Image (cartoon, rainbow, N blue to C red; front, side, top):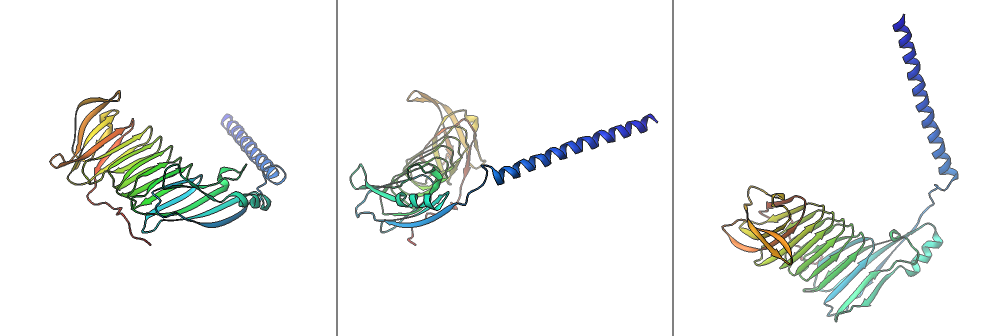
Length: 313
């Protein structure tokens, strides 16, 4: 008798709890539905437009600066310099969109250095940053220097042989070079650098870094991250002088990549651990400097799966 009463009481409690939960959910759905139809949560229809511009690049230009807030920049090498940009606009209504269209167009200015130009995507006064997105296609001639500044845009470079500088925010930067130097910095974006270069500095605050060391002799590469991971690729027969600012046990080499640490040195007031990474029976290929408090993975790359593409399409 007691057991039967207990079971009935428990059943009643469970039914009451289920009814309470169901009632709360129904009330929440009703509130949300009412707010979406009658309150400030209505989604207005967005107005959109697109325009395409061809930017003339004066003959003899040796340095190009590209500045944009959000979008994509694709760079390749060609026999003739060329810049094309597609601008997409969005606004809450057609009237606002028309206002944006009158001022949102690429602006071309003379650079601070001789034989240099600056091309930037303008942002209409009072417009949200994400109201303007641009897609760029840039061709540069041999030896042209390029400086890119973007807030969250992605940058892809193929076959460029001049000096490359990228100051990014949260977008991915991928570069395969055929010469020159590279200096790439982002806040949270990932960095990928491959190809041939004499000197490179890549730095991301919280993003991942992928760095393939060049086969050219006497090259120097520096990689730095605060919270991201670093992946380093060496070719067969290469070894590099290594300098590590951080714990050396964070450097984790594949079995095919021998490594050794021999002591410490001080450079510019910073204590660096010294060593060598790679095929120590081969010839010295250059120097590698790493700053990291997180794992650094080093592996052997027999054949690059990312060939440099220089052909003009």
